[in-house]
Amino acid sequence: MLNLEGKRALIFGVASESSLAWAISNWLIKAGSTCVLSYQQRFKSRIIQLTKDVEGIEALEVCDVSKEDEVKDLFNRVSGKFDMIVHAIGYSPASALSKPVIFTSEEDYNTTMVVSAYSLQRIARHSLKRLNQNSAIVTLTYLGATSVVPGYRIMGTAKAALESLVRELSPILGAAGHRINAISAGPVKTLAASGVPGFDDILEYMEKSAPMRKNIDQDDVAKTALFLLSGLSSGITGQTIFVDNGYNIIGVPPHLNELN
Ligand code: NAD
Image (cartoon, rainbow, N blue to C red; front, top):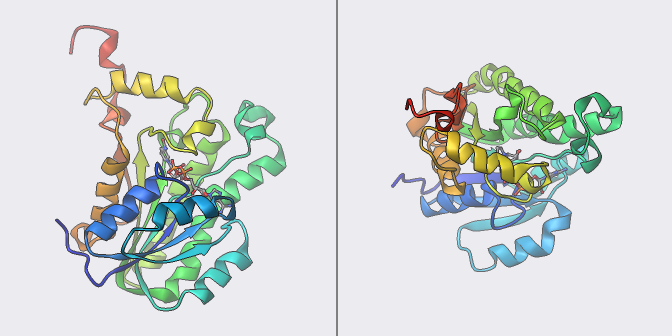
């Protein structure tokens, strides 16, 4: 097991037990790191309940990442430096996810972009002076960034922007000795995923179609996050790494014929 004793993480995006960010926090704590969890106000009671007997969580900090002042205040409230930052945030209003992109309103487009993509830039900017040498940032993206996935709609555009931001931010962070990468996770049942129309059909299709003939789970994502946040990945930055049991390399899924 990786030893992260003495390391400190700031995690954005825990909302429930099923959150990818929660699995990442647990694996980081298991490896010896401590974590500060930032959460959205509407999940406060759930987060208090979830974390109450968990050692290794230093503090719980409320923050809406769509608001510059709230992110600034968060960094002012929490003192000291960090070694690892996790950005596991995605949101698009139901009014946008329920319609084909040609009908997305300007307001819904902006909200989706600010929360799901721009927030990474905002967090990276505020982190910069608060990172120890050789720190790492990880964000979470999805296949909808580069391919059309029914139901994912405007979120695909936001994830494309997010992946581009990872590349654009990498030389800026790199000049200060830090790395930034994205994990493109296969579908996993979480609160955010339940907002994507047709999500259960996608899970069923991926299970049949991926080279490994199964779906991933939260721990698969968390283990790769640990690798990307630790010195084991010291030469990797600006990348999008798929954790999807190989689904992204499939042209025609194997279950369509017997040739495989
Ligand atoms: P989740 O619902 O547990 O997490 C989404 C988080 O975004 C929540 O904690 C929510 O509070 C936070 N959030 C939304 N708007 C916010 C705001 N304005 N300010 C602060 N926080 C805000 O679901 P998840 O699936 O764990 O999602 C985490 C990330 O993983 C997202 O970026 C999602 O797009 C990505 N992802 C998920 C899947 C999947 O199938 N679950 C696949 C690929 C990528």
